Length: 112
Length: 113
Image: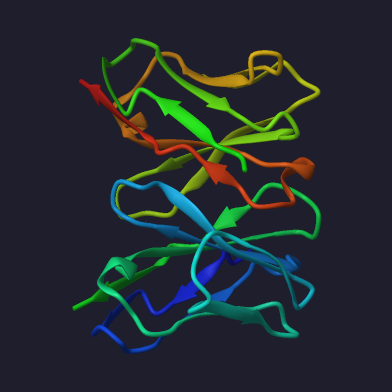
């Protein structure tokens, strides 16, 4: 069974640009979660999608947004990139209403 | 909102010794507590989890204990091996883990051969 897959592996952008990160959940999983892992700050919850709907968002500005597609894959969009957005962005998936969450390898976003 | 504190931030042990990592949480509604292991450059991997209706859970050399009254939970690794070296994260969640995970800041465990 394939795990959670994320693309791209690395993404290099400059300040003010926009970034799109993609996530495919484990087959049969309908919930997708996004986390930011910045150096020294652990994993911080960004967004949670289930059955195509945004269920919850963390304490991040509105320029962090996303969506979930009918096949349950998900996109994270970050607009007006800032230097402090440099981090590893991790996607996790789970069955609806059930733990545990399984993580992908992440997308390393670097802002120059 | 929920806050999870994790200690220590770094832990160095000799191969064969035990390692203990402790976490406290603030929201008494939290009822699901997973532990993840993240090796350098790799994804966080679930190693064990516990729900609030259970006080202790074991899986081979790994055990987790939960004290709901004190709102703390701990990871115990016995007979440590060099391959146990990694960063370990505790987390807490409400509604059985179907909601967001709130993570501690991690413990870097080094097992010296």
